[in-house]
Every structure is written in C-alpha cells, then in structure tokens.
Image (cartoon, rainbow, N blue to C red; front, side):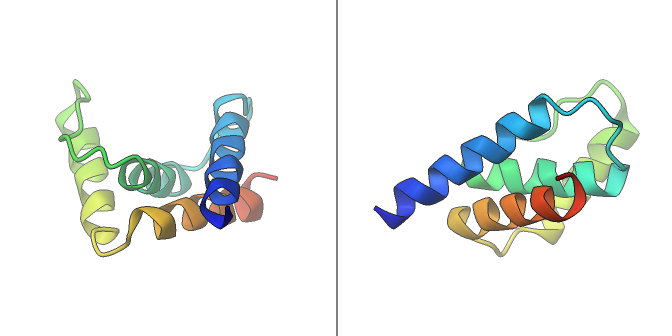
Length: 85
C-alpha cells in the first residue's frame, strides 16, 4: 500500500513537470533526469544528439548511481516540491 502511494505521488510529480511552462534550471533538470531514469529502471545511455548534453546526463546518473528506485522517486518528488511548486 505504501509503495502504491509513492508511485502515485511520483507520477503526479512527473505530470506536474511535464506540464510545467517556466524554464527549469539546468542543474534541477539534470537531477530530475537522473532520478526519473533510476526510478523507472531505465539504464540505457543518454541519447541526445549533442555529446556535451550526453556528458552532463551521464554525469548526473553517475552521481545518483547508489540510490534505489524508491529513493529516486522520493528525491524526485522532494525536488519538484522544493524547486518548482
């Protein structure tokens, strides 16, 4: 039950970000990117056409490599609440 609430809160935060119209600072975007990928167990390499963007995304993933999917969801939610809401 607790896990379902976490998933629901995570999905709500993702929807909020997807509908957010104001530019989001790059450092926040990179953290959101890493947390989202980890929460969804997506371990594919970044696929940007720009090598520099791929490097930044890879670095964000490396910095977050030791967190679990549940921790990533919580961190994503907390970051959205702190920085965007």
